[in-house]
Length: 135
Image (tube, rainbow, N blue to C red; front, side):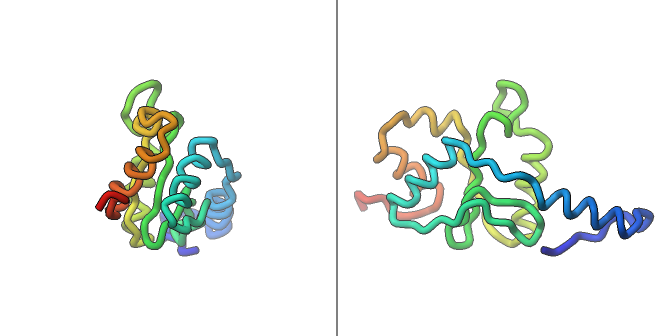
């Protein structure tokens, strides 16, 4: 892990405790995430789940050098499509600190695809910039 410099007035011991708390967040994998990772596997990719990055953030799935963030309802304010502050911060910091591209799968877009696995796989291929099966 790499630690960004904190405010110089913050005692080192407190900085360490804060960093440990940040990276020790309990893992939770949703059904939505399981579905998306399953579709990535069906495409023939090998996603790594819940990858702890150098920044201390966890990425839902990592496909080569692309992070896939599964954005369920808790990533948005109320019932809006506006991301929460912590989601916005993660979207800014991960590419900047960890030097990877991030793509996001918002739950309402995934839900629109229903149970059609072909549509789900095409959706993910498009997000990842991969050729479709039809090409």
